[in-house]
Image 1: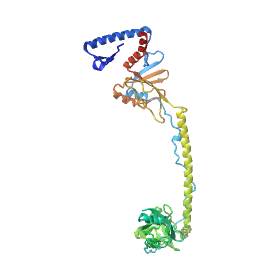
Image 2: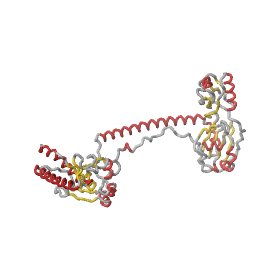
Image 3: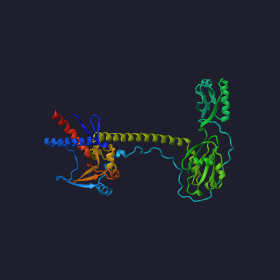
Image 4: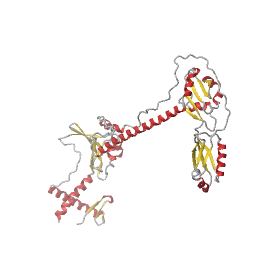
Length: 471
């Protein structure tokens, strides 16, 4: 049997062997095709066989159908129907970064004097400290850096474990550091330059190439205490550069008194109490450049009772250390609490996601039918509205080869009737309306098939029967 295919683009007919008919031959072929198709339709009708495809009909007496052309104005009206999207569980709106920081209270403040009367504050100047180079002390951490060759590195072993490696050593209570393969070297009380000379001599005595550099990494042996009416009580380390009064107050957050005429800065040094009124301190910038010494205790006070300042100085440095330890423990407990909360939140979220995957959680759906890529359902999102464009294109759109872009419908049931919102997307400009129409639960998005698609499917279904009859 020789089959004839329509070859519309060339205006002729193509035979099954690839031969194209044109002119009179094409006219004859078309006439033959019309006759064949007429006979085919008669055969179909005679057999009582027809192809039926879904479409939107407006003359159904059982259901009241209202057709509404989708325009920006009709989309606004359609969106007026009330719909509140479902919300995610509370576990998705919670964070695990909350908790109570227990056991991290501040140090006791200075006693408060309820009845203060202004009077002239004594100015007891702080003696000058002669500038002197920094001397290494107990608790300081020293860094030794190598600059030698690989052979020197191997000789120094733990001290110079690799070329350009830096190794830290803490000065022990006896004032010495312990270097592997060398032994103990006493460095406490020496300047950095003197300590380098001492190390140089020791390395030479041990027949080791003394190519190294020395620096102080952590300054722990010389400190100044600052407290009272400052932002926070701190221990300020004295480093290579001299520590001034203004530097110490700055590291404590600055003075926080409201009435400077009542306030004073008291410095306790070697059993003697010195006092600088805050107003005097402001008026004389040179007072801020006073150099502090190891063991100085600074207390900013708004009262006139010097005994209260003395009480502050009696608080040992271990009080601040105790507070630091307590705060670290509180932070650790808080971190544990937050970790437990985070795990609980994660478990609840995982369970919810598993229930959703198993379809055990209630959801709102929109259904896709007709010439869509996949006849399925689209779950409306949590916490926001979805549009017709979201539904169409989250599923990959629709097949324009078989689907008719001029016949896109949104079927929405309202009581006992159905509203069919019709979108003609043959003009692609009209697709903008699809981004404006909000979807509602149980909406059905339906796309009709192309007329040629309906014809092709009819032929595909009937031809096997005719071939069987012909045999």
